[in-house]
Image 1: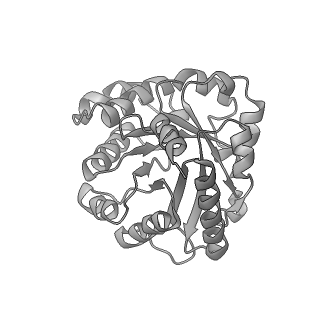
Image 2: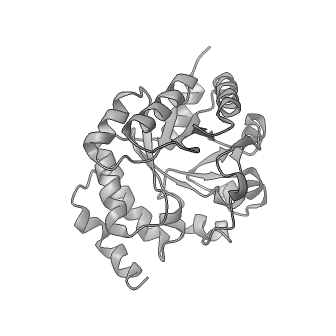
Length: 263
């Protein structure tokens, strides 16, 4: 079977082998600030970012997605803050395709109480994606009671995503380029770094720069984009680091630090 379909879709998400993804799938977890009107954010960041991650209901009700230039990744997993680590499937691959998805994403927490079910779901979704030529972004994290986040556990989580057949793996940054290079070594598909909780611009861009230097293929940053005062400026600066290999972080985040002053 030819994989030309998957290759073409991956090029939309990773045009030069690198990618800037903005996830906005947080609403199921809890009503996070900044995504009340997602279409307004999409209008500001469209065509600057390579892809956005949305849940099916947002896609279905959006007045903007049908004309969006950036790639669409439909998220298949969900959980609320009350059972935040216990991800379940809330959408099918077929539904995502119906909605016009260029890819789908799934979330797996290694070490959670329902890890076995999440692994099973991810493995089956991977096979379905292959049959349709649809790329799979696997969000892989070491999360659960008594589970530490360190180089070894992140490395393990990433490796699981690769072993299950993901085309891109998203995970958390391990704190330094040297440590994250160890993570990259254990994954034969592109790895992107999560933005995590809202942080100041200096810290964010240091992490992004470090991840790229370590060999990461990009970032998937949500709150630090849609909660920014000027999301369009934030993604322009991120794009410079990721696609233009700008390594002088002071130049990149200076403009955004001004907008965040006093916050």
